[in-house]
Image (cartoon, rainbow, N blue to C red):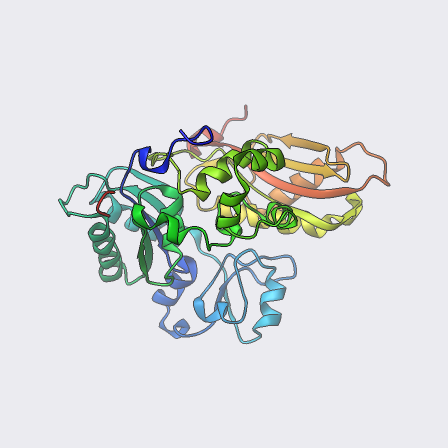
Length: 365
């Protein structure tokens, strides 16, 4: 034991592959419409209050990213081709990708329509290494679906996800256990899951900018700064992640939130609520199940957190329904008009199957 944690070499080693489709929605659109190939494609409803669902790599060269306001994307690239999202088609392609995964392992943990973890410690096809499995999957996706995917191979989920992004697009990267101490320390601390902009800024204030800095700071100092997350941060900085691949883990909730640069009154949050609701609605379209409950989260300037929720007789049927319910929840917040808020969030929870929603209530890698 070291600092109350298992040494990395004592943790159970697995062979994990993280597969991430490249610019998935935009790539499907370009595949199905040859006129879009080579052009900056933005998958989004056009309009002042819309957000980007996906951007082709041609569009990304202009700085366009997912979840960006559509008007910003249009300003960055006036020649961009805007295509309204077709989630029914994307789900069908995602199922075809999932069928390819299932040829190699039954241990598949989808994260969304376009990415998943696979545990191939033992694989169905008898391939000798996880790297070979990843190569086979990528080749099958390319040949059968005319799409590209990037993959990361590592002994755990945390590192596999980092690896899949390392050589995007259409890349493969492997992190061996013996490479942890060379690979991890130079990484920006923001590459660690759970380290958002606020936490990253807080860490930079105490001189922590890289994973190596996290290691140097030590467990007790991290716990003093970040509580329980400090423990998790310490583990990940040392390459420790014992989380198993969980097949078909049901989504419990989907949410999006925004921290304001300056505290604002509720009356000034209309556009933010609409933008967050559209992000959540777009993300929810990736699910086969339907969300019953709408949640609004507010954090005051004093850091007090308040939530309001509503489960309508019928689940929201459109983005506008979601926006309307979120706005109604905001009106249920009984605060003085001059009360200021630093964060607002919109979420969907209580996911059910569609038919249930009709009634209210050192390993070689």
